[in-house]
View (cartoon, rainbow, N blue to C red):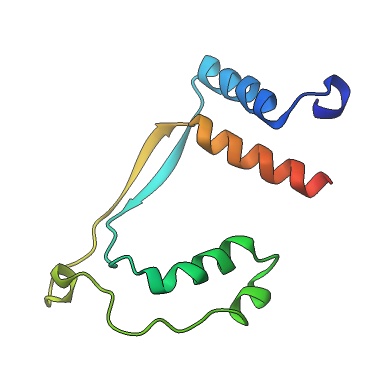
Length: 107
């Protein structure tokens, strides 16, 4: 589709998302409480995981983050993290992410 009609990633995403909305396509999303405090010290690790070609490449570049980053509420014995599965429509942001990754793999 992208090659035949010379569409941009944005145009492909818009068309695909419109098709999903029209057909009522949905997906299941796992919703989990975030039990960790965000730390700027860990931001470089996020970039490493996001940009790695494979797990071995990422593992070799990860830096240890010092300290306990578990939110105080979850440090109490017996307090458990909640999780639920929720059915949701597919968002345009999700479609854009998949289209961009697919197009990057093609080139």
